[in-house]
Length: 313
Ligand SMILES: [Fe+2]
Image 1: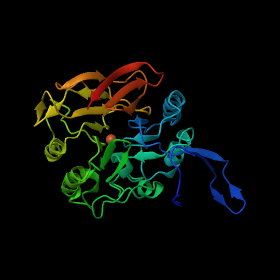
Image 2: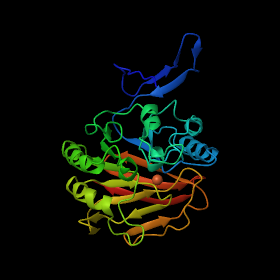
Image 3: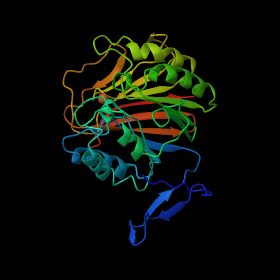
Image 4: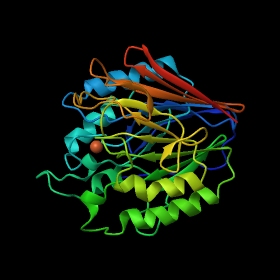
């Protein structure tokens, strides 16, 4: 991996750049710096695929309909096998319509932590391929990190205790205390937490072990939205606080899938007010933050509306 840091850029300005060295250079590309105000970001659920053209099509459609998107998020399970480099090539090829122009803020999923033999794997390829903020807890940099964009503070948590137990037995515990500090230190108007695995049990929608560890911190941190992935279906909860639906609380959104892998067995949980199995075609979401409004809209790959919700503050 090679990375460079650009400094002294002007806000709201278009720059041209190319990457390379010696005689080998990429084509000239453009990037636009943040204006500091309203913005839209694209959010993609699991892109793991047998055919990464499906991911390419979802990403291309989303960006062509929101060419002003500031950046995109991929919710984990970017690829099916995290140690297989050919799949990473396919993922990057799939993202080639937007990655040269806008940054990606990825989240690691369980499939990033499977070796070629389908055994637990530390995820070195994922960690080496992306240049991410190093403000996570000691020893978990890049796996957990946080950043601000406009009025929003984003906190990324690695939920792969099962796969990483051999190397990181305190994975969740150390992130719980980090997240508490990270949320408390932010004075941003909106707070969003991003996790790959769900915090609710599939069977009855009650908090699972991961949820039990994170819900108190999420409640205390007044988090507005938690995005999860992993089950390849779309779902949006009613406001949820202290382990139950409440008049005010955090909205939990299960992102769906941007690749070709589906899960027919999933069903809506009791606290969900919107649900779609996204079996017919993939989906993606757009997050728009504008003056005291935060809107999340989920769309099918062809643009058909699944669900939209607006929070005001
Ligand atoms: Fe997953």
